[in-house]
Every structure is written in C-alpha cells, then in structure tokens.
Length: 310
Image (tube, rainbow, N blue to C red; front, top):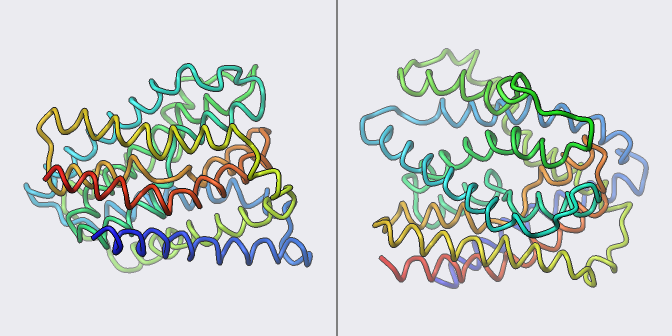
C-alpha cells in the first residue's frame, strides 16, 4: 500500500510538472509570457474556479447517504482549515512583508483540487472523492475570504459584500441547491461548465511555469522559510488533524480522506493570489514548487500512518 501511494502521489506531481515545464518553455520562447499570464489569473480565480466547484456539485448524486457524507466531510474540512489557521498564528507574523504573506498562505492552504481528488480516487475510490469534494468546497470558501484578507495589503478592507460576493460563495449558492434537489441539468448547461472546470489545473500550471521562468531556482533549495512552510503544511497539520479526528471517533475512509485533504502541498492559489494582490509571485512559485516536490515523500507516509488506525 505504501508503494502504491508513493507511486500515485509521485505520478500526480509528475503530471503537474510536465505542464509547468511547458509554461516555463513558453515564457522563455516568448509564446506565453508572465506578463500575459498575469491577465489569465482573474479568469482562473473568478470563472474557472467557480465552474470547478459547481461541477463537483453537479456530478454527485444526492441520496440521504451521500448528502450525510458530504456534510460530514464539509464539517471536517472546516475544522482542518481552522486548525491550519490557528497553528500558523505565530508563524510569519509580519504580513506586510510580501514574502511572509506568501509563506503564511502557503502554510495554510493546500492543493485540494489537483492532488487530493485524484489521490483519493486512487486510494479510496468514489467514496473518498465524495469526501474530498466537500473539502474542495470549504477550500474555496476560505481562500476567497480569509485567504483574500491574508494576501490583501493595508488599505484593502474585506467588507461584508466582498465576503458574500466572491467566486467561492457564489458557486456554493448555485451548486448546493442543485446537489440537494437532485435536479438534472441539460447537457447544454453541464457540458460548458465541465469544460471550463477542466481548464483549472492545466491553465494554472502553465501560469505557474511562466512565474518559475523568472525565478532563481537555485535559491529555492536554500530558502529556510520554504522548508518551514513544508514542515507546517505537510507534517504538522496532517498529524494534528489525524490525532484530533481519531480521538473524536472518526475512522476508516472518512478519516483517510480528511487527512489526504490536510496533507496536500501548498495550493496553486498561492502564486495566483500573489500575482493578483501584488505580493512576491517569485517567492510563491518557488514555495509551491519545492513543497510539491517534498510532498511526494510525505504524503504516502502520512496516508499509510492514517490507515494503520483503521
């Protein structure tokens, strides 16, 4: 099982970095540069992210069992993000420093959509995907509220309207009633949503590659703060969540899915938000890159430990 999990995690990260390499080459050759990619960020954050979330609701069949499981996973993901925020209260305190804001965001928010969902499918099957879908909803709600506040600079107030009117909340308002009611939308509606959702990972990785093309990759390996981010995100957070959830009586597939969601590397939104809100995008790219590489080693170990508690 450990070897299978290692191969699955490594394969998913490998797929990601092939697309990143394409973005890197595109920037170096002038085909698709960082300047152009910056204009893509808002499209990703506001349209593609919303479609990704709505699409996850559309694909789940609403039964008493699936609804119950979804909301249980939803509650656990809220707990995971709350724990992540609390354990990072005293880390990278000076958020006015552009790099510290990036490190703090990367320590809290994980790559749920790309890493958690496919890994849950491979390790746990459809039931695990259902649980992780609940985590994806919560991820969007937190990133577009707390995450925006974290990345925004002084003078940018997070008003009630910004909290309520953001891609994460709007997507839930649209998608949740569809899920709960069991309404089957026509193909002409669902297919465009699905196609836009499918852009999420490849386009984000292309943008990521253009940012990497402008960074000093050698310095990435000697940045102690990135290793601190990796420690908090890949080891401390999942182990604390594992202990808390196990003591609360959660076991089996639900526990493993929750820990998969907690143990994924830093989110792609780290560099997209860095670009949008004027933080250090180069540092964000290096952080996501190195933490993702390290997750190949940590995630299989964390998952194996979790499954020993069954």
